[in-house]
View 1: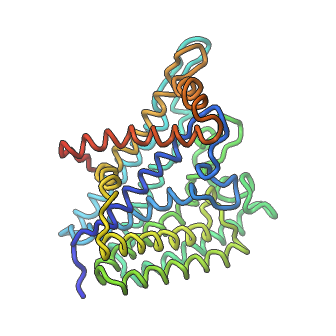
View 2: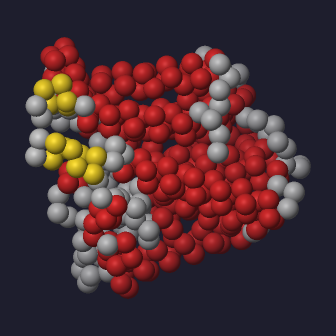
View 3: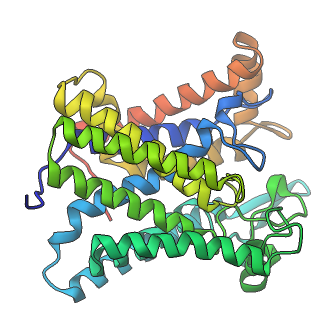
Length: 375
């Protein structure tokens, strides 16, 4: 059966769900410990929050399965993906530099370029999109799978060979951190809470396994388009998902599941879970025609990049504006309302949901006015 260009609501809902939960986990309230499911695993391990970012890369791959045939020439294809890559990367870089100034000794000081973070969430999305698009455009699906296997095994081998003996999977002993420091410098890496330890969870080396999540999303999207909306498609997605999860759990006995290292077992686990989620959405939305609630997530998905940027920049503004000396608006609203009405970790969840709804409202207005911000 030939590949069609028919849109599948399930794929669009999946993308919208990913954006929704990205905002929720990135905007927990303050004043109490974060609600556990909204927090990443401290190092080795897995939480629901750890699924969000790889799911977005999976959704990027889904989108590629629709756009692959749209380019008439290789030059048009290269030009388009290069432009998108550069824009997304620069947006991510500027987002971390924003608001370009910081408070210092009662005044404001410029954030120097020498201490800006180079990598980040959007930067990883840009690179994974670029290389993932090249792979699926120029290679057959079989070759794409082979390349993915090489990337997963190659990353594992690189950590073992070039990492510090006995500390290959630790924050400072892994080869990825060493490579980032050599190529980008200590001052251009992520420093948790402004501390002295430089470690970037979106480093260069672990981007290799992130590319596999994009390829996995592409293969899933292409398969759904090729096979159509039927029980066989759903069953195949479920079986593939279970197989990948089982493979990941077995591999984890030797190469632990760790989001911050984006280990190969982590990549396979998240692709497997995403296949199960996508299979469920195809069953519920495309076969059983359950539409209730889909509009909420579709609203997020139609301006996904713009709403994600809004959520990050607005949060930074909330944390920059002071309502009292050394008390940001972000901390103040949590102290005077959320932690009083909903004390403890539950209050952080309520704040995250309310903040997400604020972002959804903006997305809703844009959607109603038919304003769609594309790159």
